[in-house]
Length: 213
Image (cartoon, rainbow, N blue to C red; front, top):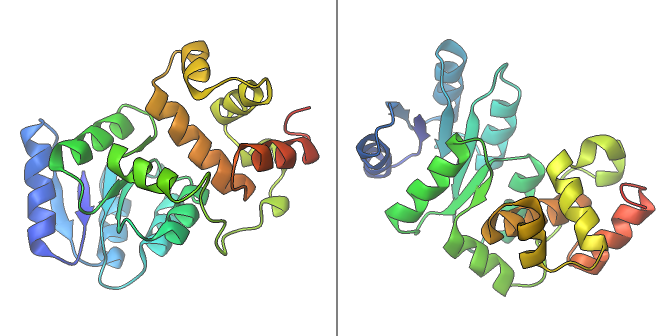
């Protein structure tokens, strides 16, 4: 794992946290450009992106996504940055956590992402949901410019199909044999990718694009 953040204390704290969980840690970087060089030159399974000194978080995530065999990514964000959260989800970031989250919750997010899943830290997800039914659409890529079959992952389409049947989050979780937080994370990704603000809006956009029908 590699941590990218301007603050040495933040880097050391995260490195210590994951090391205690038995994960190997690469020495952290303050600059996104240095992190990209490290990732290109060495095997790295996960990058935790805090606040790089030389570029916005979203830009670093986009550049990481272009690296061959790219590592999975967890981003630490200020809770109030809902527009940025929407952009990050559209970039297919695997994990999100609040910068002020308890260490144990950040570690849970990291472990879920390393296990191959996607995760939004519980406290951050609750605050996002408290702001409305979905995430702001922001100024990210136009979903209409992306082919329908490439816009959503197979699992996101499964969730959307069950949503169209009127299933509740809990029923979707039971049907797909996943946790309720995982369903909520998938829904957040679906809303962001479709540019939707709630369930009805997401379903309408999905029907219009023939993602479901």
